[in-house]
Image 1 (spheres, rainbow, N blue to C red):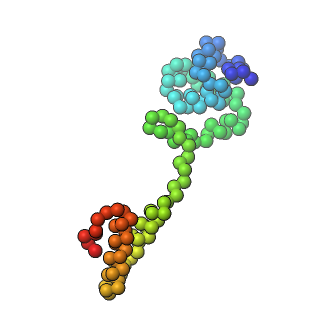
Image 2 (cartoon, rainbow, N blue to C red; image 1 turned 45 degrees about the horizontal axis):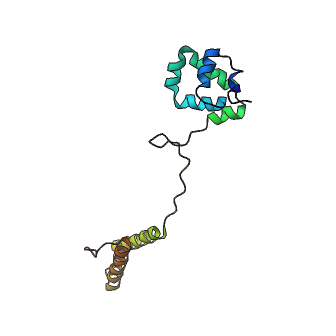
Image 3 (cartoon, rainbow, N blue to C red; image 1 turned 180 degrees about the vertical axis):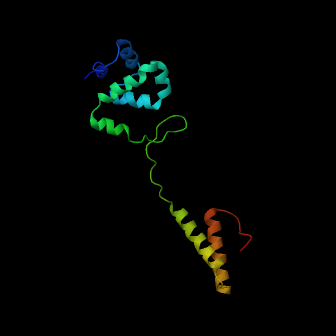
Length: 141
């Protein structure tokens, strides 16, 4: 099938066919996706015939293509570029170490153990955390 041959079998006027061919779509599915992305301009362009044209395009699709139109589109970038799924976030080793230090500090500070060994451990953990975060000495240790 040629680049715009999909339009030949549709129940639309020659003028509508020319206007749709000018959209640059290479298939009925692509044209329907374009229509879904900019429904208002499409309705303004074709007026009362917009719904008929859309039904005609849908009728020309295979059942698989019709089903894929119902799939959600990927998120759009604020500037309009479609983005695929975001890559999985893998925490860096330094993030994991920071979280472990913070968790241990929190646990020790919340405990009722006020022994010298616990206070020394808190001070040591706080220094490690400060060094990891590249900040000066902690004032509240």
